[in-house]
Structures are given as C-alpha cells and as structure tokens.
Length: 204
Image 1 (tube, rainbow, N blue to C red):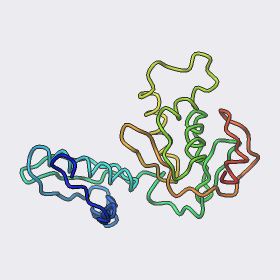
Image 2 (spheres, rainbow, N blue to C red):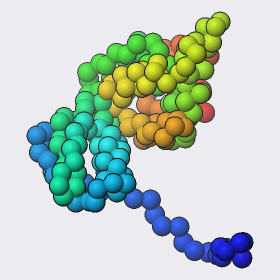
Image 3 (cartoon, rainbow, N blue to C red):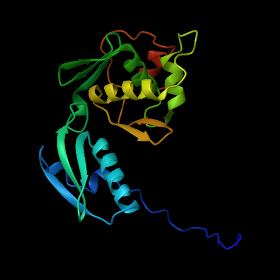
C-alpha cells in the first residue's frame, strides 16, 4: 500500500492497439468518409487526435469535422511515400540522396537526407528531436537557428512524402523509423554529418 493506492504485481499489460486497424482505411477511396460517434468536449478532442495519428501512420491525408453526433473524417489522398509501397522493391542511393521505389527515384534535399540517415542509423528506436537538430547543424559553427521546431517540422514533412518507410511520431519527444532494414545500397556510401554510412548499411 502506497498512500491510498495498492501496488499489484503480475497483472498482464494489455497489448497496444494499432490505431490504423481501428478505422476502415483500406476499404476507402479519396472522397469517402465515415463518422465516429462521440460526446462533445474532451472525448471529441481525443477522437480527432486518434484519427489524425491513425491516418498518419497509414500514410493518408484526411480532413475531420465535428458533427452533431461526433466526428466525421474524409480521406483526401494516399500519400506517395507511405502505406501503398512494396518495401521489397525499395532501395537507397546514399550518394545521390535518393530513394529508389519500384524503379522510380525520389530525390530529397541534403538536410532532409541527413534526417533520414540519422533515423536509419537507429531504425526501430527512438531518435529525439534534439538529436536530429544536432545532426542537421553539425557543420554550422553557430549551431543553427535558436529554435528547432519550425525547421525540423518542415524537413520531416518533406521526408515523409518521399520515404517509403513509415516514420512514427512520439509526441514532443522524437521519431522512430519503422520497418527499415538496410537494403542493398546503390552507389558508394559517403559521409554526411559525421554518420558512417558503411556502419549504417551493415546495421551497426
């Protein structure tokens, strides 16, 4: 007993629900919608947040509106970078800063590529926003802008549109590159922002 709480052991932890499976995204086409019944107030805020997170993890752009019964969500588009790509057909061209997806190349800016390389170095693990910001401005003697949110958010948005692997957001903390297994590289592997690409491709 701690205060008015009873500490219990060996209570099974419930499995984490996959938000993408809560909603019928696979059956939807752009323009389709569905409504989630909920009460006004905090519950409605939680539903809209849940919808946004689920849609992002599924690689979708959606729009939500409050209704008399709850929240209605429309599917606007399926983003080209996530949710509809055969990852077995994806490769990485480290030299040109490009993703190769089903034979098509997606080139990104150098800073966007640095973010991807930093995430890939720790694929499946959390990379903090501070770590990404440090990687972006490792060569800047002034250390980069005074605030990181705007710059980092813009670069992350560009990365998500090009990267075929899903990137999960951990609110106010950082990001996790999911499902990435270092594919066979295209071209040689240069250094960017002090990251050893040879070690990265070897998965170390």
